[in-house]
Length: 78
Image 1 (cartoon, rainbow, N blue to C red):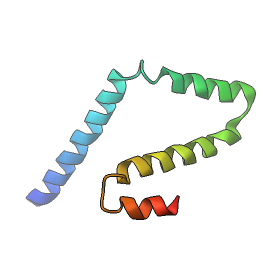
Image 2: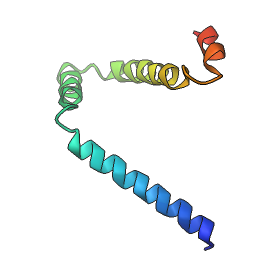
Image 3: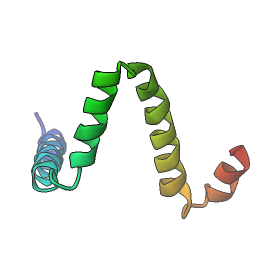
Image 4: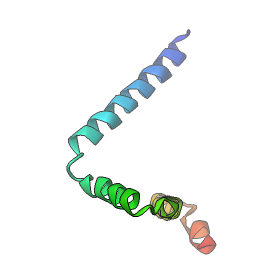
C-alpha cells in the first residue's frame, strides 16, 4: 500500500468513527425516529417506509444542492 491509499483508508475510518460517535451523542434527539418505527411495526404499515425514505432523500438532495451552481437546474426538476 502506498501513502495515498493509507491516507484514504485512515480518512474513511475517521469519518466512520465520527459518524458513530455523533450518532451516539445525539441518540436522545432522534428518539422520535424509534417511536415512528415502533408505530409502523405495531400498525403493520411497513409499506410507508419507502415513501418516507424517498421524500427524505429528495429533501436532502434539494437542501444540499440549493447553494451550488447546480441549484438553478435542480429547482427546475421539481
